[in-house]
Image (tube, rainbow, N blue to C red; front, side, top):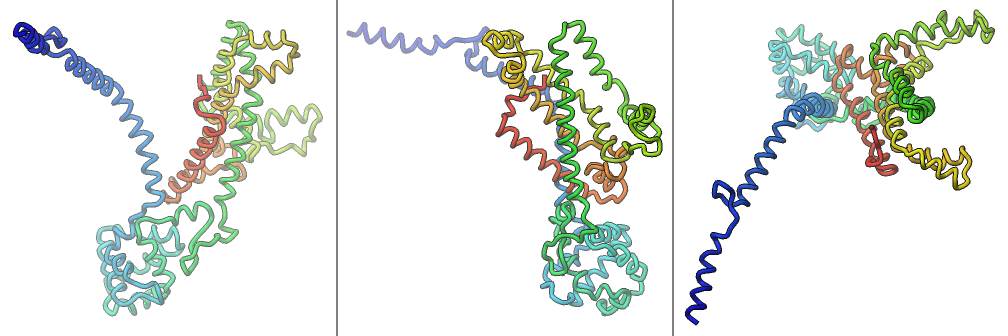
Amino acid sequence: MAHSETATADVTASAPDEVMRAADGTPLKDSLRRSMRRAKIKALLLVAPLGLFIFFSFALPILDMVTRSFYSPEIANVLPRTSEQLEQWNAEGTPPEAVYAAIAKDMREAKENRELGKASARINYVMPGARSLFSKTSRQLEDLQAPYKAALIDIDEDWGKGEVWRVMKREADPFTVSYYLQAVDMRYDAEGNIEAAPSYMQIYQKLFWRTFWMSALITVLTLILGFPVSYLLATLPLRTSNLLMIMVLLPFWTSLLVRTSSWIVILQSQGVLNDVLVSLGVVADDNRPQMIYNKTGTIVGMTHILLPFMILPLYSVMKGIPPSYMRAARSLGANPVVAFFRVYVPQTVPGMGAGGILVFILSIGYYITPALIGGSSGQLISNFIAYHMQESLNWHLAAALGAILLFVVLFLYYIYNKLVGVDQMKLG
């Protein structure tokens, strides 16, 4: 009995020594854990440059754009005392003397710091004429004395209008929806209620509608033109299909500006296409159709430029469809047309989805082609985003327009995922 207890004690005592160990004597489990940690760190360091590039070139600009669309702290930063006093005002009638004294002091400091233009431009975006009001007042700030209410109204009677102060009170809040309202042709009325802008000021709803239907039309046209080309590339012998593929890829090796400008030569009234139509007697020489600087020019040019983006996803999917499927359908009694539409076409849906999303998203954000050959009727929303970025310098409105475009694209992408499934989309 004693011998048995001693043997048991020896086994128990030797159990810790039976743990598997690495060559350096450390437990194998700990060694594997450290090795896996080092491998993860190396992988993270390898993808870190790409992650930083994507963050700074893609994620950060989008975040900044969305933030600018609803965050506008210019008034609160330039006129801090006025913003604080207006927050306590009940927005009835005209503000008390304390508000006028605050804005007089804020404007003096802002003028010395050369920042008054930021506040006046901010208010001018939602209340045209505010910039001239601030400029006129700033020229007489040195002679301004209490009582400031009477003195400011004496400079310009607009300072005695409650509407001006209600706008300043509303826009003093750094977080605003004013730019989103303007981006959909809405605005605040004198009482602060949301209403539709006058008809002569409504432009962005029409632009959004034009952008989406033209982009959808261009997507359908590229699908109609690209499907037979992709089918031909996928079914021809490899040597011939490679030669044709070079011709599909050739536009990528040509400047976009050159390709767009070539359509001006082809489509203008005295261009190649009109000369051919006149020589064939299709149209009269004095009745040449206008095919450039309008919607037609934009649709033709963008369809041509975006066609490869539809062909390549379709080709990659069609190339993977075994020819035996069609032969099997024929052997089961289907004629070529039925076999094609019942067996072949459904298998190309992932390529159609990938090409369609790619072309549509590129279309709604296209800028160069509509700018060069779109004229006034062929402009898209992207052209007005560029206008506000470069000409009017209303970056907040440009950000709101871009954010709406982004949200619509994300919504359509969500719908596509629900109906078809993103996992079914193939880009190659």
